[in-house]
Length: 171
Image (cartoon, rainbow, N blue to C red):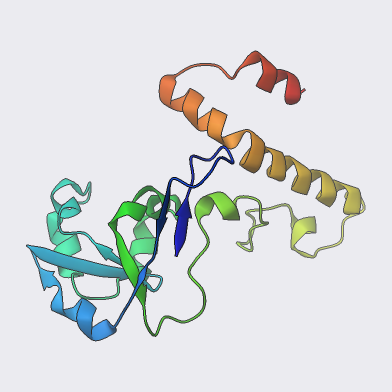
């Protein structure tokens, strides 16, 4: 089940229970007028979206009824899935492991991708950085991902500056 809120800690707006779907069921949805794809064990109905897909309709129809995970991540960032949660039909019954985290949840974690983070965060010793640096970075990510993200996205969409209160909190 998924719980959707307005992001401000208020009461839930909508609770949706996600279906458990078999691979065989997904395989039936392989036509232009009925197209489902699998990404990371989650099933998405891309029938109506295919016509407005920036990469074209044909590529989505190529994967209709199939698992598109590998090629999806070769071309898209994780945030794309967050943007299209409304297309999600459910999760594969035999999906391995839990559903993937949303990009907004992962932003607080340190990346395991080589050179995406400073070497000291990936286990290499440094005479210049210590545990206090790691803790500072964790707290900064926690603040930016949790407390300021919503306002930052709002400001970006409206092409406005952050509020005076937010600028004070950021120092």
